Amino acid sequence: MPEMVVKLRDVETTYEGEHLPAIKDINLQVDLSEFLVVVGPNGSGKTTLLETINGLLKVTHGEVIVFGHDMARNPSRVRKDIGYVPQDFLSEPSAPFIVRDVVLMGRYGKLGVLRRPERRDLKIAEEAMRLVGIDGFADRPIGKLSGGEQQKVMIARAIAQEPRLLLLDEPFSNLDIDSRRRMSDTLCKLHDERGLTTIMVTHDLLSIPERCDRIIVMDRGRIIVDGEPKYAMQKAEDLNILVRGLSL
Figure 1: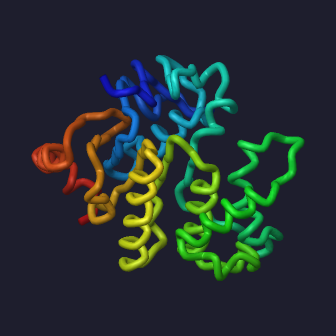
Figure 2 (figure 1 turned 180 degrees about the vertical axis):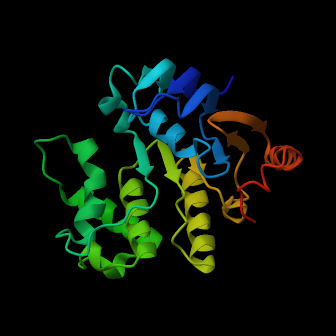
């Protein structure tokens, strides 16, 4: 049997101050080295699902297991092995951090609070910047970069973490078509070469990498389709979900 990396059992998550759950009745298993894509209209619960897996939101019902650990008990320990690219990250123009330092932040979970980055950590950060094509921006303030360039910085930061699990929330949303293709190829190559488990959220069907093993379709906070890509997309079309918010 394949090794399980993520398992959600009857999970329900409600944002603070809200009465209705953002996701509910979620049962999901993601196995080692699997490339899973999550699609669905805006507001369907895709981002909430990633935040729940990453231990950023309190689960109001059910259980989230990552690498065999209950995320409710020790999320900070588990997150050391999770690279997370949030949706629509944009830094203020006055932000004082240069790109190299932001990417190097991906190493802090491995280093701990008291250790300073060493030469090896700098090399890992530099390689991550090279992989996503921002090595030429290393000494520039992140707030002075375009939205697409900042998005690449966040992807590089996640790669520099040397994660076992990669969580990507709309990672190509600010990139042009050519950049999307190149970045998709880079992430797929990394996924295979490093034996990653990857979960990627998108509402843009053209952004789904051909490499993906499985697609789940969410709608109104629930997983309503789960299967191999061709089947899942056909099922979503049959349910008119493509018409209601997924872009082609």
